[in-house]
Image 1 (cartoon, helix red, strand yellow):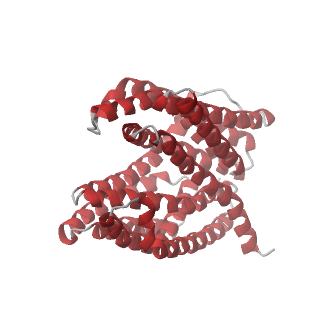
Image 2: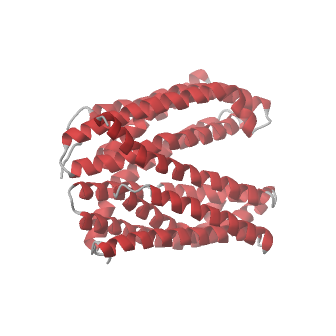
Image 3: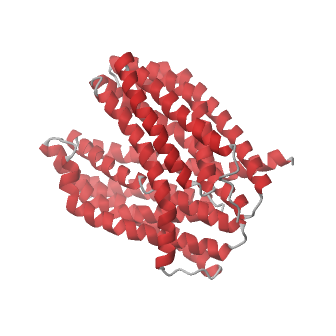
Length: 435
């Protein structure tokens, strides 16, 4: 087997299970929405509001997975398996430290958080019923993120896949039982989801605990370890904030154009996010492999794997772009019967398709630099790109005045800007800290 083929095989070994695990979550969330949707429109709208709150809270804590993957992989590369598992467990304890206050605050602030959306009384009531129970699952979800990061750092993406699929199947079963069998309504959906999350977290903790016992790693919480995990996570948190802010800019811009544009934006972002899972799977492989090779002090292997993954990202981006462009005339029919929304989506999908190859490069480099522990650069770069994108979006709306022009600004100023700053970093040795 040639060296290139060997690298490709290793990338696929990590990326394919990671992709399937990423896709499993939204696929089963659709099932949850279908179950609740049959209860009525107020219940479905309430689920949408509660889901938006929970998704925002959890997405801001994705650094628990990314940071843990990088730190564990680096120690694996250095040959310190015991230290790798111990540092990962510090990340789990950090998840608990963050998750418990989120749960307490969420329980107290549920009415206020729901009230921010300005929905009607019935919809708000349903959202509160769901969120007040679902927020109890915040800590288990964060623990799952950290535990998944440990396993990815250990070059194991299959176990998180099995747990994701199994946990979500249990979630669907419990939802059907509680919502329809026990007639608990939207409250039953929230309860079933929380129980499935607790079970999934418990399974992942058992897997990590077994590895810790086998290698005599310390499982007790230490202030020093938790603080170290927190310090490593702050830059990644800031990076995530800039990404979320860009999507808020897009959504806000669409609201100024009208109801049809806002609906089209929601559909377009959903499709963009789904396609991003394919590219993000390669980024997850990049985190694990980059951390391992730098931990081993092998700069040549780091460069080789990085360049190979960049090719994978580019080719995958071209493939998803071609598929999206080909499907642009008909995709809208899957989501809406509104002719105006479908008309808007065709142009937006074509712009998004043209941006896919750039996104493929961006996602891979993002994963590489996260794996290298270069979070500080990612945070500042993300802020710089956001500062450029926000006024570019305003100009696009002021001059072009259409949703397509807003997406052109996103594709060029935001995704293009990220591509420039990340490629500039990759060309230097500044991020390649060994050991």
